[in-house]
Structures are given as structure tokens and as C-alpha cells.
Image 1 (cartoon, rainbow, N blue to C red):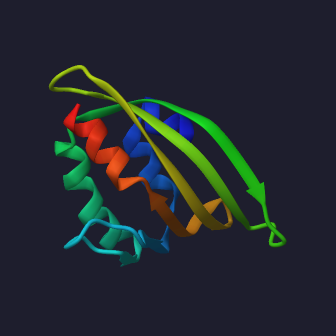
Image 2 (image 1 turned 30 degrees about the vertical axis):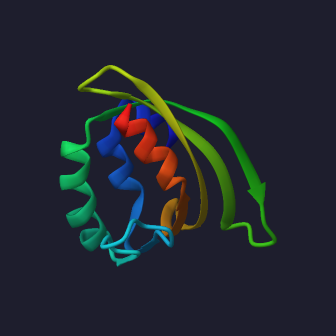
Image 3 (image 1 turned 90 degrees about the vertical axis):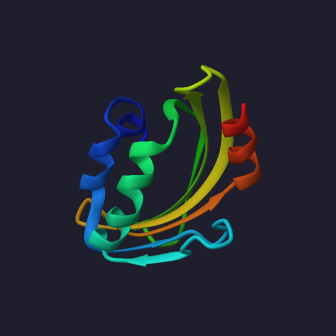
Length: 123
């Protein structure tokens, strides 16, 4: 996933299971906090990704926390992106809890630094 964010963002779409549940508990007001199924999630995510004026350049400070369940991890990371409009570089921190099955992600709960993202986009 880390490699795909930087090299081929659309490749991330192949990691979602058909029945994936994606949750974003701290989503901005008016934005969905939960998606059920890959198609529902991608119907929302792809158009946003196409107009997002940021190119992810790095995923750093990655810390993976194992859990008692071998199919679940907690991961902390910082995404670094460059505005395609201004060239400004910014970063934001994230924490994700994910569950896998058969090499696919079946549950993704991401806690985003929305204020950091807004500041980075404002440049």
C-alpha cells in the first residue's frame, strides 16, 4: 500500500476486498464516515482522488503494531504530499486499524489529522 500510494495510487484499489468496510470516524462534517463494499467506497474515493491537487511523495514514520489477532494490525504513518498547484510540500499524520483476509483488506478504519491535511492543502 505504501508503495502504491507513491508509485501508482490506483493500485491501492486492488487491495480492497469486495465486501470491505471502510470507516473514517473523524471525517469532515458532511462527509461519509462509513462505506460498505468496495464499489461503494471507490464510487466515493475515485472522483475525489482525481481532483485532489496533491501528489503523495512519501509515506514516512511508519510504525506497525501487532495485535492478538494475526489478521489485524494498527499502523501509524505520515503522508507527505506536494500540491500540484503551488508546489508546496505538506504532511499529515494518520492511524489505521486494518483487518485482512486472503491478502485483501476487509476492514479499514482510519483516523486522520484533518486539520493537518487542511493546513497542508492550504499551503
